[in-house]
Image (cartoon, rainbow, N blue to C red; front, side, top):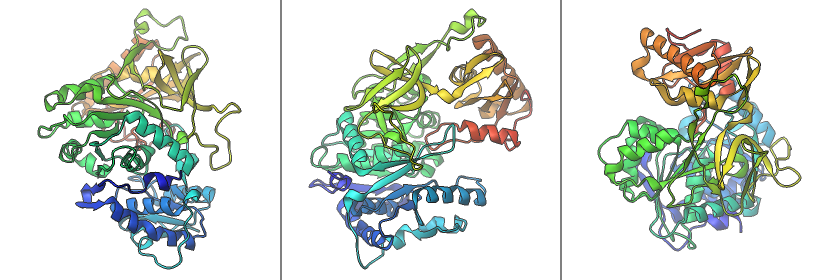
Amino acid sequence: MTLADLIAPGSGRTRLHFLDESISVDYGELWKAGEAMGCLRASCDGKPVAVVLTNSRACATAVVGAVAAGQPLVSVPMPARGAAPDWYARFIQRMCALTGAEVMLVDRSLLPLLPPMEKVSFVSFEDALSLSGPRAVDPAAFTLTQFTSGSTAEPKGVVLSGDKIVANLLALVEWLEVGPGDHVCTWLPLSHDMGLMGTFLGSLTAAGDRWARGLDLALMTPQGFLRGPARWLSACEEYGATITVAPNYAYDMAARKRGPAHDLRRLRTCVVGAEPIRVQSLERFSRVFGDSGFDPTAFCPAYGMAEAALAVTGTPVGVRWHATEIEPFPDDPRVGTDAAQGYQVVSSGVSLPGYGVRIDGDGIGEILVKGPSVADSYTGGTRLPDADGWFHTRDLGVLRDGRLYVLGRTDDVFHVAGRNVYALDVEAFAAEVTGVRSGRVVAIPENGDLTLVAECEPAYCDRDSAARLAQALRQQIVARLGVRPRRVLLTRRGVLPMTSSGKIRRKPLAAALQSSEVKILAGSLE
């Protein structure tokens, strides 16, 4: 089965609603409009085409058309807010050079924002969909190159064949037990694997005759969500969504900025991706929206990565999410007894059908995954799986009773004052201090010392409040881990560089601190 076979329109009624454009379209109509991508494939001789994926109708049409025509796609990021044009051009040119792409598809509205790029020509989705003439169609030739999030390093291109994407989508719909009456609402960007695989292609798969036999897919834009998080839940109610997907921070934002009362009784599955998944976030959302009919068992924490298309583990549908206490990583007998008190970590569930997960070593160790969707190689040719088929994720985790708990990256182990310090421990304990924004605190090694950077809640941004908060953070880490951060730097909200799934990009942040590009609040400990 090709990916085109899997997502082709079935006999049921499927409609896509592009909320920020106030447009609804039958899927069969969108599929037909995408046939022009066969003309693009002919004009490009089947070479990969770079694409800046957005949540627009034109982009969605082009993606579906590319799948049907077998036009290989290379997903590249849109310009980040404040990014230097020259840097962005070099960044994209490297991606295009790695993949052989010479054409880049973008929304027409983005064309004026893009700097000229050597050997790369821009074509709007609208112009690509208006092409006519000879068509070249080979659905089996479709591939998608998606780049890793780059939370701890520069992104790497992962080449996924259509059959690997099919394998992951089939596992997804089996895990989520999709059936008639299910509908989906999402704001996740199609430029991220959770948005493209998990909600867009996943929904089109689920709409097939083997599962839901038609559904409604409501798509917001990420910008629309950020302008008003309550709109996400309003859209879930309006379109009768039973399934939605979001990273941890989105549930925090929705709980903090609750709008008018919602009826969330139909929401049976809320996938939570992008570790770390926080106990406080799930509990707060359940408490805030309890009177809206929200069922806490709807939460389905999950774990995945670009190298496996998307998902590897997930919490079974209808089973309440689970958390366990993790003690600080053992390292130094000098750590006081107070530091033995651990913190709660949410389980990312069990292996999806056809997948395997194990830990390298006893107890806490590197997470290894195996499954039919794990890519064979990165764009540079580096092989992903080892000789036995296991992919070494460089994520730290632990398995208990078959459940996976994700603890961070193996890269995030620092040597400070003669001992190993784990970023996860530092960040988990720092997050307990009142005044720190949820999920917006990061530990960074600097010249053998430890630096802590945190975004403040608005009420803590004046000099005196920031000074008290910085002292409280330093004392917390000393008391809980026996390590004294040399610097505790506080910033206003929105300053820390993030991936689209809500992870802080540690290495770019460290570089920005060295070049004094981060605006630090007065009162910080420098």
